[in-house]
Image (tube, rainbow, N blue to C red; front, side):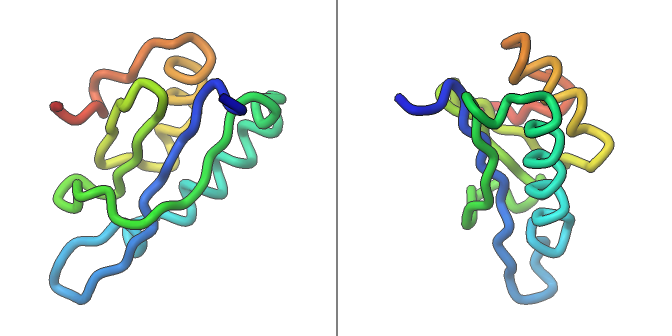
Length: 101
């Protein structure tokens, strides 16, 4: 596998009044993850990218980290550093943001 970890962040947009990740900061999160992972040199072994619907709209913006398959919900820009440090660098999922399986 090319990457140790792969972060998919939903940027899907739906018609109002449905909640959607795209309008709830999806691309902001993608850009922040890419920027901060590059600053730490993680972009050589890990990748963050936008994706379509992850089917966790009620908890958006949503994201998933592979290969573990850990889903996070209600992610804010303030959570990015914690997810990178705890989960991506140290392998410990951030339980307060983790969605039930």
